[in-house]
View (cartoon, helix red, strand yellow):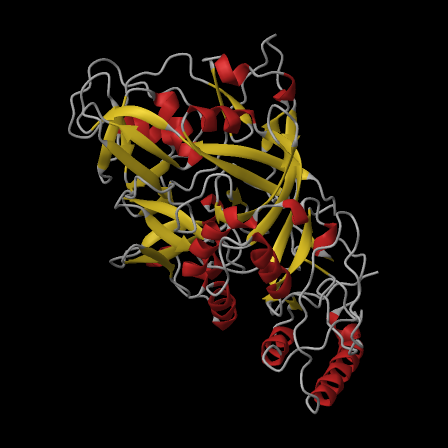
Length: 558
């Protein structure tokens, strides 16, 4: 049964008073030396410590008033944990369970994670160190963790395993129905033929981000669906409080219909454009293809609209020019329109049954084509990231600014309104750069929904190998995102580039489970100032934070 915040105040005060007393009592004693955790046999919980436990408490988000036994904080960790409590956050390593709007997290022993003791952690280590280059700039806790990581022998699997067991706590991710099983798909870096110049058959432009795209922070919007006045500051749209559409005669004011705005984007940004005195959602795919994008730089031209669409879904790719040069491109922006792929029909002409991914405010529908491999050989479909998509029967010409197009401009025939803009990326020797800003490592990098799995964090994945069905259990690093990757227990496994990678990625759509590794003492799932505290057993709801770890680049809470 849920209680209001007011009715919980006495209980909360009592818990915090107990916590303060316990912390005060611990200050007179020196902290116990750190213990080295040894991996337990698979399926067997780790043995309890022989040291005398020090009583402690943690306040668990989603379970107000519940006192959970936990190890007392060290002197270094105590200030961070006290700060976490002041934010209404849970403390990794102390909280047994906590929730966000989309997921529930349950603490587990490393020995219970299937395959943990068998994995070769040295294969993951370069990807983790790559994440550290970014994470060290996100607070002293990650800086400390990554400094300790720099002292670890990167070729010693046991040393790496001990590092993670000592510095992190493992939490199994469950969806908003508290189910542990989700979907693991695969992706790769495609390579397609292209040209720097417009010349048939190379008629489909690969665009860079358009300079006329404006951005609006939805957290600063008034409620409701009326029309408001706004100004443009640089590339940002700022709603003018206190002004109405009656003031539209003033210079520099534009009208914005709030009903046209999608407020629940991951980065809390809306992509807009100016038309006269109006601010409108940025152009759809059909509009870009039939009107052109004169304010976007063309990076290259390709001959296959379907291959370009697949590259947009993958988020990166290699364009091979006739002289052998490789132009590597990576995701730069998106037009703000929803990702709406069209599922292909089965070989017998019947519709594919959708498989909805859970733990997402927008449930995307993967297909259930596990009983056929048509996507491997059937050129009438595009099989990618868990979808078997209908390839357009005929792709027509598209408008290209500054070019004379022969024939009617009908567009690619792809109905998805979403459109991805690219940027050139260097480093032909390394993997493509993912959304986290570091090179992806084949076999050890995954794309995730950053609301439930923050970028840069270690995630242990248990799934099956495509084709053989053999267990695939390994530590990965969350370093990428994608419009198709939505849901709490949802991962997209990066296979690399080349034909084998493409085949494996297109076949990959398996059930799987995820465990996120959180630095001990880290504040997570911080409730907003207006959140209502919920009791044990209450459903996951909108009064909980959306992001496990807020990040303005990939997941921003209100």
